[in-house]
Image (cartoon, rainbow, N blue to C red; front, side, top):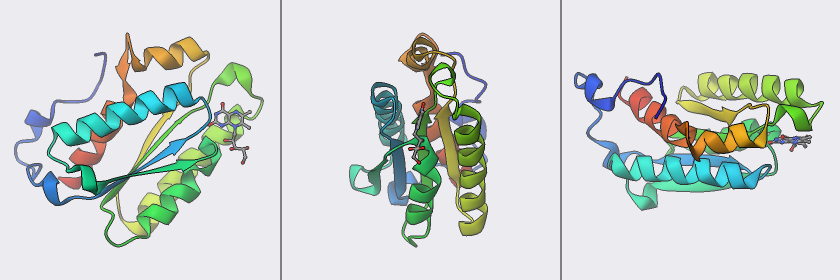
Length: 158
Ligand code: DLZ
């Protein structure tokens, strides 16, 4: 997979082993559902592969990527949630809203993360075409949902 992420084994100085007790919320946008569902599958399977239990992964759907910030806030404010992963796909060619949605969700997710002092991961694809999105959602460029999950695990070991 083409990725700039280091392997988790490169983080052996960090406490990455106790994921069995960590609780994750995955907030998924319904827009471009074929893509976002693949991102979700990648994130879910990566969390399980890293020792997270099924009961500790909560999936929540929101209508579009613009709503990811609100969904993230509703999950991050719950004391029992350790990290939130936001998954969406905004395709440039399909919307004049592209810049507004991408800016809003990037800032919104950052604000939620800082407000609640928890990792809130930006797993939003911003491709030019649906094919580019599919290539990054389990296709030839891997699955960015996997990377979002790995990022959450790494941040919990910070
Ligand atoms: C309206 C809209 C458009 C045109 N395109 C996308 C998109 O490509 N990806 C996405 O996740 N959401 C899109 N949306 C919906 C907005 O995110 C949002 O749900 C609506 O503007 C309502 O707030």
